[in-house]
Length: 425
Image 1 (cartoon, one colour):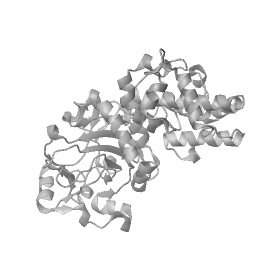
Image 2 (image 1 turned 135 degrees about the horizontal axis):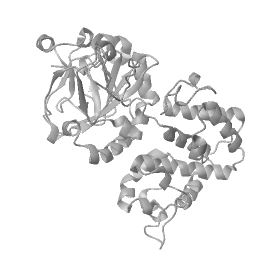
Image 3 (image 1 turned 90 degrees about the vertical axis):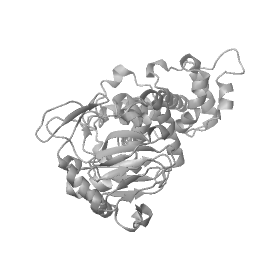
Image 4 (image 1 turned 180 degrees about the vertical axis):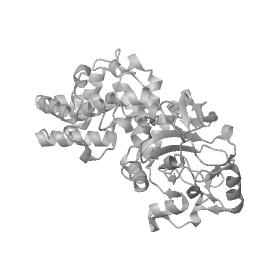
């Protein structure tokens, strides 16, 4: 048995060289505790609804089901790792949560990851067989497609050697798609590497590398967010099932939050290019006072947090809405730590916030407008940039689009279409 600790540390060699040679690599302490906790809170909420998927050991379609996971998968940190192997065309196309618990503690036999999820079935030479998982078509593509992919396994719990870590046979990814006799031969004649990991570590792996995992000798949570990236498109109209996960409403809310503006839906429908959006912002930002902009900016931050955290409808949340119209006190209390992380503002602990929300001190409840006023007081002018020149508005818009889509700043030009050029559905 070989542990990853015996391998040469990643920092001492070029990652692409190690991955080309071995088919996997360990990136230590890449994800902060705050990011791990934020992801776990999102996963816990989703788990109540979708835990029966993936054989009871996880949740599929995480890019579609979690805004937080989607943003994390497109973060600069993860995209940089994926691009270091796949090039600038890398993008997330699939995410699954795996969780080995005392109730789902089984041996996973040696195998390669051979299927991809697509939007709809199109019969093409070299693609097959087909199957359905969680109402999405899955297919085995040609080896060339899989060779242009990597998976980042983000560990959300410690996974020591006795908790069923993933294990690899180094170099097996270079052989191509194997049949069962080939798999058995590689298993019998090569020493596996057990890849233990700590919370916050990332394991990069090629889909075609032979991998397995043993039963845990000390059953405990072993939550791993498995995110797959591709460096290219699929042929002849075939589309990745989860790749176009960012929708126009999500980007619109991010722009509203940055500029403290309410962009009506009927107006947004006509702002189809970056240039049209810029001209709209230029005309409207300068007519909004700093105090109006700041309070609106905080309102939109709160609204996005409520939508992401509780799955509420955007149109239900107005300045005159009270939280108790939408949620119970218990729901708000359980989600408050995540709200604080998502909003990224100075906010009071729930014990204080509950009084502000009117649960203990008054005969009425506070509205979103009154809560925004309180947070505005706490945060002062921290959020309002004195940057309303034409150049500043353009740069702020570009920054929002880059942060939300992970496209290169060079792709954001006035004529760029949000749907055609930036991949927003």
